[in-house]
Image 1 (cartoon, rainbow, N blue to C red):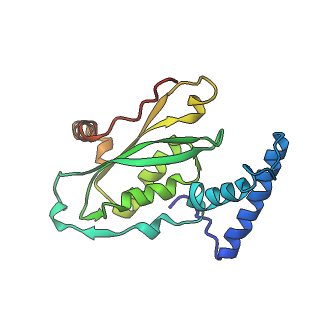
Image 2: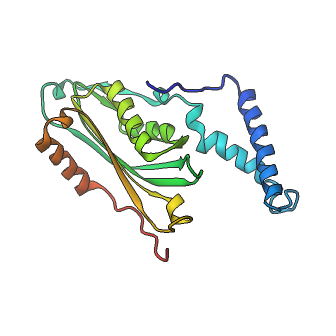
Image 3: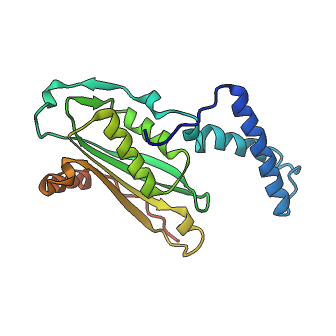
Length: 213
């Protein structure tokens, strides 16, 4: 993989990070003019620190290879058939404003004799997206990872997401972004690529619409 995973060796390391974040959150509340000791905020630093280390930023501490389980499927060797895994929920944190963006990832690949366990797509994307990201980079990272573990003849990763940094601040509009990464034969064979995109369009869910914004 191109990116090095920073994996803590002990639970004590994780707890140390949580303690540091607690202090930072408490200081932030004080700077904003709040009283961190009042009832509604007393446990906020604890909750926020656990949320970041164990959930939102867990991608810094977990190797996505942990969730890889592949199967040999000889029937796919030498054939043009492809596999489409669509509507994979995707949630991440924008590195520019530390606000969420969320949507769906769609994957189409032409196996070269190996397939990935169905549920593993969601687990791998969860790890790769659980760190500070921009959607453009995340799309490429998912494509690079799947391309390396599967070595497919072709691969498409398409992501659609709504960015709350544009929804609740700035222009305050429910803008969505679509990004796509192509690997292998999908870079050269336009007709095959168009067919794969048609499959995605037929099967994908509509992104949520936010009325009133």
